[in-house]
Length: 306
Image (tube, rainbow, N blue to C red; front, side):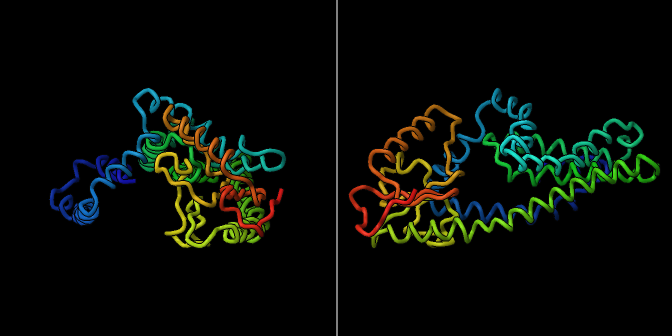
């Protein structure tokens, strides 16, 4: 977003005044000072964390270029279509308005030459490329940086078609209605599933029952809402491969998957799964979570649930 702001400012570079730049820099400098103080408290930890977080997200100019070209299919289309089956694939309807509207804007020379269109398209390019460059894991949650801008571009196209009237107005309005309906229906479906009560709560109850006093629990950070964001919870998708820790209880979910962006991380993932298979056994499973307990600390009261 900072790059997007800089791009917008540079579009009006002739109007830039050094006094305004200095004033705008104040909150950034304050933030930088706070960050530097935070880093100063534990520079080695900061270096290790930053390296670990960046090495599997950004990896060389070649992979970065590939990410830019394949991001539309592997992030956007995957999040709205290919990751689903059956009726759930209808989620793709939510992309109809921003996609068709964006193409319509680009195809209309008089429309795309307008100042507002140029600025929106610039912001969209910055957002799309930025997300593709800094996240090669293809997480859908980063669509929040680009899809709202694409929708704004489509809205500009809709306004132009509304001015035309007749069939064009109707067609553009119908696309908007379909996308809004699909989005609202998806939200209503998610609410109706009530996964917190039906899936999360039972899994957390099973993990709590299996965890011995003073034991360690490994699982995703969302487990912190049940166990607290600190001991006994450790968020480690490689199950202690790098840290050497061997927790008493492990909770696995669909998002707790491998980071296969390097040979080292792939090997670590595979080794951690061997450890899970050989030294743990399943005591609880539902559609979202699986709870494993280390063989030598299995509570006598726990029973496997398939």
